[in-house]
Length: 120
Image 1 (spheres, rainbow, N blue to C red):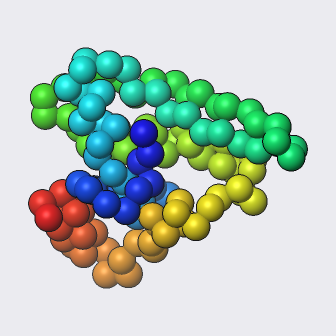
Image 2: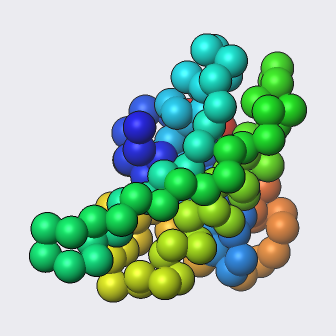
């Protein structure tokens, strides 16, 4: 399942100097099924040749009740960034549209953005 879709329930994760909008579907599904949540990225290495990158699973205690959405999102983005930094040319527009700069006014604005995304 994709975490960079722009529909359904969303939340924002602070990552480096950006906010990343992330779909909650894969997280909620993993929590409901008591399943591991493993970050996966597919990279085209040559025409019609692909490499699948599997990251380390999200620590199971993050998926408790209630799930720690910020910790989960941060873990996923850290794992994704390992492949993305090696292949930045493969970032598609869907992924790029899921990112925005941090608010200039600091943490107060950031908390409003996060709260709005978590409670649509």
